Length: 263
Image (cartoon, rainbow, N blue to C red; front, side, top):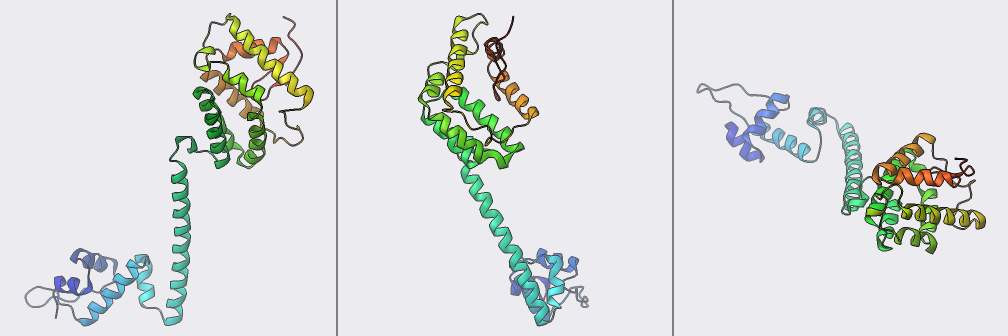
Protein backbone atom coordinates (compact mmCIF):
# COMPACT_ATOMS: atom_id res chain seq x y z
CA UNK A 1 0.00 0.00 0.00
CA UNK A 2 1.25 3.46 -0.89
CA UNK A 3 1.10 6.86 0.75
CA UNK A 4 0.05 9.86 -1.34
CA UNK A 5 3.69 10.86 -1.73
CA UNK A 6 4.64 7.41 -2.99
CA UNK A 7 1.65 7.37 -5.35
CA UNK A 8 2.67 10.72 -6.80
CA UNK A 9 6.25 9.51 -7.25
CA UNK A 10 5.20 6.31 -9.05
CA UNK A 11 2.91 8.22 -11.40
CA UNK A 12 5.35 11.06 -12.05
CA UNK A 13 3.16 13.86 -10.69
CA UNK A 14 3.15 16.08 -7.65
CA UNK A 15 1.19 15.54 -4.47
CA UNK A 16 -0.63 18.75 -5.26
CA UNK A 17 -1.72 17.29 -8.61
CA UNK A 18 -3.05 14.17 -6.88
CA UNK A 19 -5.13 16.33 -4.55
CA UNK A 20 -6.36 18.34 -7.52
CA UNK A 21 -7.49 15.15 -9.27
CA UNK A 22 -9.25 14.13 -6.08
CA UNK A 23 -11.08 17.48 -6.02
CA UNK A 24 -12.12 17.03 -9.66
CA UNK A 25 -13.47 13.57 -8.94
CA UNK A 26 -11.04 11.88 -11.34
CA UNK A 27 -9.26 9.86 -8.68
CA UNK A 28 -11.19 8.28 -5.82
CA UNK A 29 -9.92 9.07 -2.34
CA UNK A 30 -9.28 5.83 -0.44
CA UNK A 31 -10.28 5.48 3.21
CA UNK A 32 -7.72 6.31 5.89
CA UNK A 33 -5.91 3.59 7.81
CA UNK A 34 -5.68 3.34 11.59
CA UNK A 35 -2.84 5.89 11.54
CA UNK A 36 -4.96 8.42 9.71
CA UNK A 37 -3.14 8.11 6.37
CA UNK A 38 -4.74 7.40 3.01
CA UNK A 39 -3.34 4.30 1.37
CA UNK A 40 -3.30 3.68 -2.38
CA UNK A 41 -2.83 0.49 -4.38
CA UNK A 42 -1.60 -0.45 -7.87
CA UNK A 43 -4.97 0.30 -9.45
CA UNK A 44 -4.71 3.89 -8.22
CA UNK A 45 -1.24 4.17 -9.73
CA UNK A 46 -2.49 2.90 -13.11
CA UNK A 47 -5.48 5.27 -13.10
CA UNK A 48 -3.33 8.22 -12.08
CA UNK A 49 -0.86 7.48 -14.87
CA UNK A 50 -3.75 7.33 -17.36
CA UNK A 51 -5.08 10.67 -16.05
CA UNK A 52 -1.63 12.24 -16.34
CA UNK A 53 -1.16 10.86 -19.87
CA UNK A 54 -4.48 12.26 -21.08
CA UNK A 55 -3.85 15.62 -19.42
CA UNK A 56 -0.36 15.89 -20.93
CA UNK A 57 -1.84 15.08 -24.35
CA UNK A 58 -4.02 18.16 -24.09
CA UNK A 59 -7.28 16.53 -23.03
CA UNK A 60 -9.30 18.95 -20.88
CA UNK A 61 -9.79 17.63 -17.37
CA UNK A 62 -13.53 18.02 -17.88
CA UNK A 63 -13.35 15.24 -20.47
CA UNK A 64 -10.83 12.95 -18.81
CA UNK A 65 -13.47 11.10 -16.77
CA UNK A 66 -15.58 10.38 -19.85
CA UNK A 67 -12.58 9.08 -21.77
CA UNK A 68 -11.40 6.89 -18.92
CA UNK A 69 -14.82 5.24 -18.80
CA UNK A 70 -15.35 5.06 -22.59
CA UNK A 71 -15.36 1.90 -24.67
CA UNK A 72 -12.67 1.59 -27.41
CA UNK A 73 -14.81 3.13 -30.17
CA UNK A 74 -15.94 6.08 -28.09
CA UNK A 75 -12.38 6.60 -26.85
CA UNK A 76 -11.04 6.64 -30.44
CA UNK A 77 -13.72 9.15 -31.49
CA UNK A 78 -12.83 11.42 -28.58
CA UNK A 79 -9.14 11.22 -29.43
CA UNK A 80 -9.87 12.14 -33.05
CA UNK A 81 -11.97 15.11 -31.95
CA UNK A 82 -9.32 16.37 -29.54
CA UNK A 83 -6.63 15.89 -32.16
CA UNK A 84 -8.58 18.09 -34.58
CA UNK A 85 -8.98 20.75 -31.91
CA UNK A 86 -5.26 20.73 -31.25
CA UNK A 87 -4.54 20.97 -34.98
CA UNK A 88 -6.79 24.03 -35.18
CA UNK A 89 -5.02 25.58 -32.21
CA UNK A 90 -1.62 24.93 -33.80
CA UNK A 91 -2.73 26.65 -37.02
CA UNK A 92 -4.08 29.59 -35.02
CA UNK A 93 -0.83 29.94 -33.09
CA UNK A 94 1.20 29.73 -36.30
CA UNK A 95 -0.88 32.56 -37.70
CA UNK A 96 -0.22 34.55 -34.52
CA UNK A 97 3.51 33.95 -35.01
CA UNK A 98 3.34 35.17 -38.59
CA UNK A 99 1.56 38.32 -37.45
CA UNK A 100 4.05 38.90 -34.64
CA UNK A 101 6.91 38.53 -37.14
CA UNK A 102 5.30 41.19 -39.32
CA UNK A 103 5.15 43.51 -36.33
CA UNK A 104 8.93 43.54 -36.06
CA UNK A 105 8.69 46.74 -38.09
CA UNK A 106 6.36 49.13 -36.32
CA UNK A 107 4.71 50.18 -39.59
CA UNK A 108 3.17 46.72 -39.84
CA UNK A 109 1.02 47.18 -36.74
CA UNK A 110 -2.66 46.89 -37.79
CA UNK A 111 -1.70 47.15 -41.46
CA UNK A 112 -2.37 44.66 -44.25
CA UNK A 113 0.83 43.36 -45.84
CA UNK A 114 0.20 45.32 -49.07
CA UNK A 115 0.07 48.59 -47.16
CA UNK A 116 3.13 47.76 -45.07
CA UNK A 117 5.06 47.17 -48.31
CA UNK A 118 3.77 50.47 -49.71
CA UNK A 119 4.89 52.35 -46.59
CA UNK A 120 8.32 50.71 -46.88
CA UNK A 121 8.49 51.87 -50.52
CA UNK A 122 7.68 55.44 -49.45
CA UNK A 123 10.54 55.35 -46.98
CA UNK A 124 12.83 53.85 -49.63
CA UNK A 125 11.99 56.74 -51.96
CA UNK A 126 12.85 59.27 -49.27
CA UNK A 127 9.40 60.62 -48.43
CA UNK A 128 9.34 62.84 -45.30
CA UNK A 129 8.68 60.84 -42.16
CA UNK A 130 5.64 62.90 -41.14
CA UNK A 131 4.07 62.25 -44.54
CA UNK A 132 4.75 58.53 -44.12
CA UNK A 133 3.17 58.57 -40.66
CA UNK A 134 -0.08 60.20 -41.80
CA UNK A 135 -0.21 57.87 -44.80
CA UNK A 136 0.28 54.84 -42.55
CA UNK A 137 -2.34 55.96 -40.02
CA UNK A 138 -4.83 56.74 -42.79
CA UNK A 139 -4.49 53.23 -44.16
CA UNK A 140 -5.07 51.78 -40.70
CA UNK A 141 -8.42 53.60 -40.68
CA UNK A 142 -9.28 52.43 -44.19
CA UNK A 143 -8.28 48.82 -43.53
CA UNK A 144 -10.46 48.74 -40.40
CA UNK A 145 -13.54 49.95 -42.28
CA UNK A 146 -13.20 48.37 -45.72
CA UNK A 147 -10.50 45.64 -45.71
CA UNK A 148 -11.87 44.06 -48.89
CA UNK A 149 -11.02 47.24 -50.84
CA UNK A 150 -7.34 47.35 -49.85
CA UNK A 151 -5.94 45.38 -52.86
CA UNK A 152 -7.68 47.60 -55.44
CA UNK A 153 -6.80 50.82 -53.61
CA UNK A 154 -3.17 49.78 -53.21
CA UNK A 155 -2.89 49.03 -56.94
CA UNK A 156 -3.75 52.69 -57.52
CA UNK A 157 -1.37 53.99 -54.84
CA UNK A 158 1.55 51.85 -56.03
CA UNK A 159 1.17 53.24 -59.54
CA UNK A 160 0.90 56.83 -58.32
CA UNK A 161 3.91 56.71 -56.04
CA UNK A 162 6.15 55.84 -58.98
CA UNK A 163 5.17 59.03 -60.87
CA UNK A 164 8.21 61.37 -60.88
CA UNK A 165 6.06 64.54 -60.73
CA UNK A 166 4.18 63.33 -57.68
CA UNK A 167 7.38 62.30 -55.90
CA UNK A 168 8.98 65.68 -56.58
CA UNK A 169 5.89 67.39 -55.20
CA UNK A 170 6.47 65.68 -51.86
CA UNK A 171 10.25 65.60 -51.84
CA UNK A 172 10.81 69.27 -52.71
CA UNK A 173 9.18 70.46 -49.51
CA UNK A 174 10.04 70.10 -45.85
CA UNK A 175 6.67 69.02 -44.51
CA UNK A 176 7.95 68.98 -40.93
CA UNK A 177 8.05 72.75 -41.06
CA UNK A 178 6.30 73.75 -44.23
CA UNK A 179 2.71 73.12 -43.23
CA UNK A 180 3.27 74.95 -39.98
CA UNK A 181 4.15 78.22 -41.76
CA UNK A 182 2.24 81.44 -41.29
CA UNK A 183 -1.09 81.39 -43.13
CA UNK A 184 -0.04 84.19 -45.46
CA UNK A 185 3.29 82.66 -46.38
CA UNK A 186 3.82 82.68 -50.13
CA UNK A 187 5.33 79.22 -49.94
CA UNK A 188 1.92 77.81 -49.06
CA UNK A 189 0.43 79.24 -52.25
CA UNK A 190 3.36 77.87 -54.21
CA UNK A 191 2.72 74.38 -52.87
CA UNK A 192 -1.01 74.63 -53.59
CA UNK A 193 -0.27 75.77 -57.15
CA UNK A 194 1.93 72.73 -57.66
CA UNK A 195 -0.73 70.40 -56.24
CA UNK A 196 -3.34 71.91 -58.58
CA UNK A 197 -0.99 71.73 -61.56
CA UNK A 198 -0.31 68.05 -60.89
CA UNK A 199 -3.98 67.13 -60.43
CA UNK A 200 -5.08 69.09 -63.50
CA UNK A 201 -2.34 67.58 -65.65
CA UNK A 202 -3.21 64.11 -64.41
CA UNK A 203 -6.90 64.76 -65.07
CA UNK A 204 -6.20 65.91 -68.60
CA UNK A 205 -4.06 62.89 -69.43
CA UNK A 206 -5.70 60.37 -67.09
CA UNK A 207 -2.12 59.54 -66.08
CA UNK A 208 -1.77 58.87 -62.38
CA UNK A 209 -5.51 58.82 -61.80
CA UNK A 210 -7.60 55.67 -61.63
CA UNK A 211 -10.70 54.94 -63.64
CA UNK A 212 -13.57 56.00 -61.35
CA UNK A 213 -15.46 52.87 -62.38
CA UNK A 214 -12.79 50.66 -60.81
CA UNK A 215 -12.14 52.61 -57.61
CA UNK A 216 -13.84 51.25 -54.45
CA UNK A 217 -16.18 53.84 -52.96
CA UNK A 218 -14.95 55.32 -49.69
CA UNK A 219 -17.88 56.49 -47.56
CA UNK A 220 -18.33 60.15 -46.72
CA UNK A 221 -17.87 59.56 -42.99
CA UNK A 222 -14.51 57.86 -43.56
CA UNK A 223 -13.44 60.59 -46.01
CA UNK A 224 -14.22 63.22 -43.37
CA UNK A 225 -12.29 61.26 -40.75
CA UNK A 226 -9.25 60.97 -43.02
CA UNK A 227 -9.38 64.68 -43.85
CA UNK A 228 -9.60 65.49 -40.15
CA UNK A 229 -6.53 63.33 -39.48
CA UNK A 230 -4.63 65.22 -42.20
CA UNK A 231 -5.62 68.58 -40.71
CA UNK A 232 -4.74 67.46 -37.18
CA UNK A 233 -1.28 66.30 -38.29
CA UNK A 234 -0.30 69.40 -40.27
CA UNK A 235 -1.17 72.76 -38.67
CA UNK A 236 -1.27 74.56 -42.03
CA UNK A 237 -3.53 72.00 -43.70
CA UNK A 238 -6.72 73.99 -43.14
CA UNK A 239 -5.25 76.99 -44.97
CA UNK A 240 -4.01 74.69 -47.70
CA UNK A 241 -7.54 73.36 -48.25
CA UNK A 242 -8.88 76.93 -48.36
CA UNK A 243 -6.38 77.83 -51.08
CA UNK A 244 -7.27 74.69 -53.01
CA UNK A 245 -10.95 75.64 -52.85
CA UNK A 246 -10.15 79.11 -54.18
CA UNK A 247 -8.65 77.34 -57.18
CA UNK A 248 -11.72 75.16 -57.68
CA UNK A 249 -10.76 71.97 -55.80
CA UNK A 250 -12.36 70.72 -52.58
CA UNK A 251 -11.34 67.96 -50.22
CA UNK A 252 -8.08 66.14 -49.74
CA UNK A 253 -8.78 62.43 -49.43
CA UNK A 254 -11.42 62.69 -52.17
CA UNK A 255 -10.36 65.82 -54.05
CA UNK A 256 -13.02 67.01 -56.51
CA UNK A 257 -13.35 69.85 -59.01
CA UNK A 258 -16.20 72.27 -58.20
CA UNK A 259 -15.01 75.40 -59.99
CA UNK A 260 -13.08 78.38 -58.56
CA UNK A 261 -14.36 80.31 -55.58
CA UNK A 262 -16.18 83.56 -56.32
CA UNK A 263 -14.69 85.27 -53.22
